[in-house]
Length: 581
Image 1 (cartoon, rainbow, N blue to C red):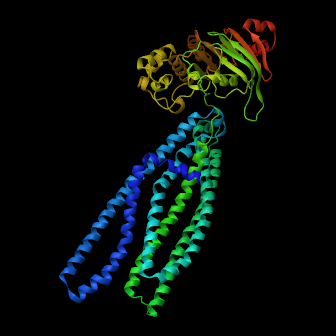
Image 2 (image 1 turned 45 degrees about the horizontal axis):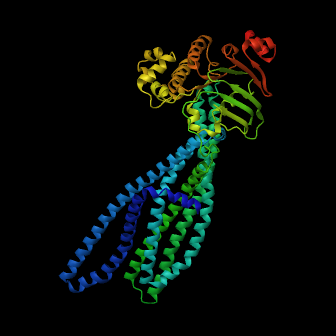
Image 3 (image 1 turned 90 degrees about the horizontal axis):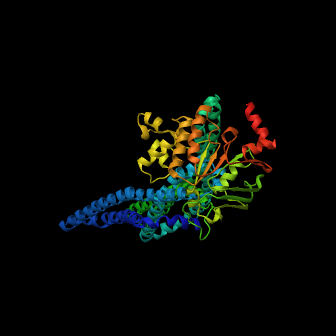
């Protein structure tokens, strides 16, 4: 019931449109119920009297009634136009609101959420699932109301026309209701399974398309096709089970509809044969109402199919929406302006969900404007340390402070505004070079973007493109070289102008010449900023004010390049290995 209540909350902002849709649907149902009554009146009263008397008054009445019927069906057509246009628009607006909510909520979730769930599955919940929900939002109440009103109206009319046949029909009703309720539960289970398989297919397609170049490089196209076929077959199996339950439901519903007709023919025929006050004209009218009574049952069948698909999608929608973020700002969190950049790690320990401990009792102090390099073997926690500083994950043991304040006491937005990060795998959004640089500060002018590009030593190359700053970079910047992407990310940080800078393996994927050019940009970018440098190439960290050697056992060595070489320890070994390579 709580789920239905939450679903109904999305109706509130568009209640006027919803009431218009329902009002028009009600009028359509009323016209459909009234038609057999008017037909009965014409057949039993007006036509016989015209045949007997030929009265001009009755002929006029007949004309008026036909005109009224015509006008009613004109109104009905207008109402159906409103239902089909504005009703669907209402459904789309509900869908848009839900998509806004799920996208906004996803933006608040921590890195650990993205570690667990695949992009394609998220995409499925924000697109395919929500379309089914919007169809339910529009057609569900409308079909339910029209069907209910039509059934009730037809039943009342039939009861007054011939209560004996109506009671006979009532004997069949409990069996029909029992069948519908039982089939509903089967459809619910299979609907959810279909949704899950569609999400798996979307995830597989997203992964395969993103990795298309890798697949081609290894000549593994056939393997990717086989993987897709496996997921596609699982989807077919789920759809097969769904359509099987739906076929049982629809065929069963049709059987009960036919059974109502058989009951009416049987009882009505017996009444006529036994001359029990039931004539053929009344029987014709009654059959019109039987049709009006059974047609909504078909709509009920359609509604249940739609309901199961829509609510299965809504359940998956709520699973994301109910995923709570432990990354919420503390009460009275500080909205900080510009930080000086004094960073302190105190007894910091961390492990990823259920995994081994990555950091243990780490203590570090970085003075404002100083460069500190983190080196050591992979898996030692260097990148984790930087992610903790940016609060991509929250530290569970110990504390991290900036300018003497625990970073958990700052608002996340203001903390991250003061930190810039450049990673080895630069992400560029599909769009223009201008848009990607401006991402560093969305209110920057075109001139400020150009100045940032000049400082990153990428402006001249941009101007050589035919479209210059309006050049489209392609998905993830595929149209640019690694060095160009890296310098655009540097320009983005020049524009952001943060007091704290993180360089995480930022040049390890570049050739030596490009690395040298990029390193000059980094040196300029790091000037006057507190800088953390993570690097495997020790040549890039020799000029750091301090170098920290860290591995799975924590901080092993600490000092300047010359001091660490003099220790003849782990750093010296790593350095000698680098020289040999």
